[in-house]
Image 1 (cartoon, rainbow, N blue to C red):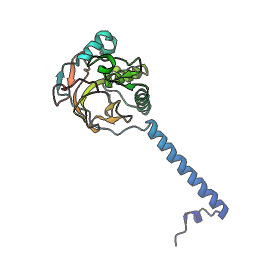
Image 2: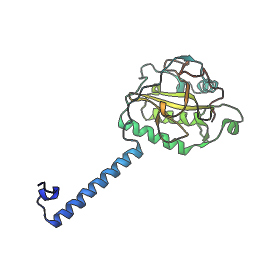
Image 3: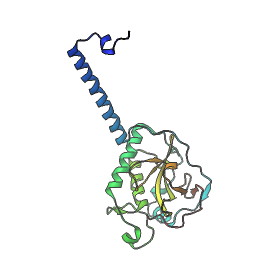
Image 4: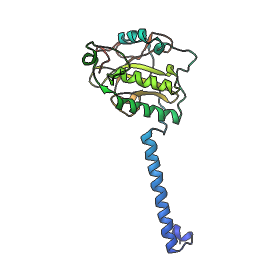
Length: 221
């Protein structure tokens, strides 16, 4: 006849109680640590296929104006990797920056903010729309050591059929999206967006990602 596990250990009743308490404590600590890792984004995401480039596309006019004022932000360094090797530390940094910037900036359309339809900027006064969030995130990530060439500004059609700007992080585990609409970083194919085009990896020309050749509305949501 099989003996209970505690019986095999040949421990006394008091010792059994201590053993059960210690086992319960270990399980609790392990669960808490796992939850904390999930919340801070230190567990690497699964591997997925990157979005497919189908050709070239014209940049957004707001991007062209932004680059004229901030040429260093738009210069492509071919010595940098176009796809970064994603580590657990990198994933944690991405999640932290995404959440911090989303919390720090208050959403305001360019029309309400500046009186024009589409201005790309760094939200230095604490207000901005979708592309401003992503430009600030990219600047912070570059300062943290991320290769700018792997951080691509991207235009999509959102769930309301409107133009929207996000940042695509191109990694060894797939393409992930930093978004001001959510704090969770998702693989590109799980956002529900239609991908129109993204910033190019070789120069000023953008890469077409299929669908319509350009959004019918400016990226100002």
